Image (cartoon, rainbow, N blue to C red; front, side):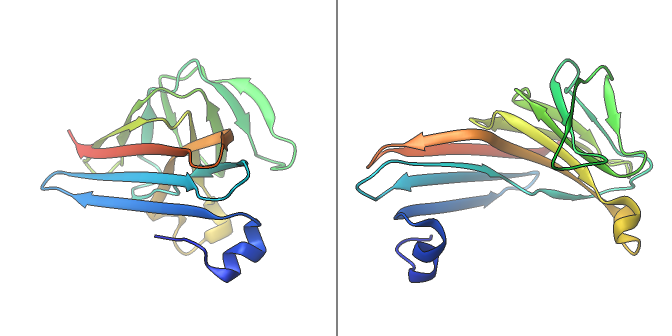
Length: 171
């Protein structure tokens, strides 16, 4: 839990309480992020869970993003290319850094190693797929990121809170 930490006040300029809860089950993992505005003025934020999965980059794929508006950050992260996802299964053929706006609350991830992972969420509106490819030559073949995100600003008045959950399970 983070609250009233002097360093954080120099970075964020407001008082906030952040709580991240993790529950590990036999065949699932759930997380909950709760942000509470404990200040006397409103503030806005956005956030993402940088979820790294062990995977075979050549066999990994994500289903459930077809039809989403995309912001492809390759080749220029500062000027993403807008588009729409038309693939049933999105794979990782090289460098991947793509935002999926208004993503569904359930995605299906095949890690290319024989595991099918269901990613369910509440209150995360977006998703991000990422793999650095040869920028991290030593390890890029062994992982991919499938991130839940809230990229539009969340505005909290004093005393208000925002909560989002994620459930990862093996199908």
